Image 1 (cartoon, rainbow, N blue to C red):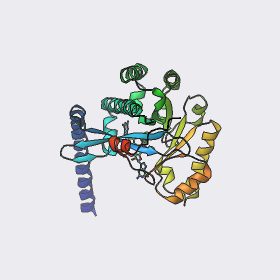
Image 2 (spheres, rainbow, N blue to C red; image 1 turned 45 degrees about the vertical axis):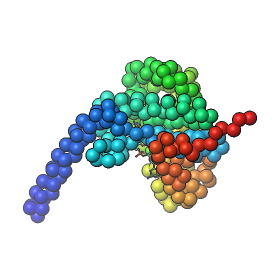
Image 3 (cartoon, rainbow, N blue to C red; image 1 turned 45 degrees about the horizontal axis):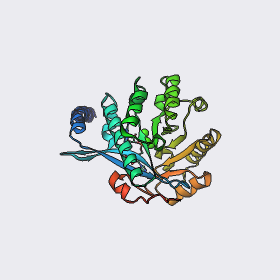
Length: 277
Ligand code: C2E
Ligand code: CA
Ligand code: CA
Ligand code: CA
């Protein structure tokens, strides 16, 4: 009916208004959060089939003073609309470097992956920023992976390649996050100095039951093999998925089946000291 139609319109509009308001509020609060130390550095284990090093991805959390713990799903998208995301990434990068240095001093072998937003990576001074960070923190850059998404690759491929080549000389590794969910073509893979592909949870959810998803993931494994890249599989939650994946190769597993993201200090507690030979 007309009445119902109008009502839906009203609800729709007020919802929109509400979310626009929320997003403005979140943006304002996020600026404060950066100053007031409300951001929290979490780590989620990445289980390697052979390597003795402890691998993890750093994932941000926001401990809001009144709203409680806020997921990055809520605020990263908003932060990406401005240079706020650059400040957030830089904060996480700094945490990651300090963490690596600290653990190395304790005799623990760690390797941390950090998410780098497209807006951040494409900044003209990205190389200098990372060089400064390495110099300031004294981090061994071989213990650092930077995760970028395909959205970066459709900007200026030559610029991307130059930045990667440059930073690779320090030992930094590069990973393509959410591989296969973007718009880029496979052609860039032969040009890019990347080390790793990450498969999104979206492709893994039904891998044990949906033949299309299975074929898709199998194809990604083949691409990785062709270009000699590591594969990290995200969002593995049960044994069926694990079994299917291990049948395709021996990927690195990042999923709740092994570990959830936890505060970095807690993550560090579970590490063993590297065996001295
Ligand atoms: P992402 O980079 O794809 O990170 C993986 C996400 O999958 C994380 O969500 C992780 O908690 C979740 N995950 C991993 N295994 C499982 C599983 O088995 N089951 C389920 N249900 N989820 C699993 P999270 O921590 O909520 O982060 C969401 C997204 O926010 C990230 O997706 C990333 O795009 C962004 N993000 C997080 N931290 C940062 C950051 O420091 N900088 C930037 N630029 N983005 C970040
Ligand atoms: Ca990631
Ligand atoms: Ca992502
Ligand atoms: Ca993902």
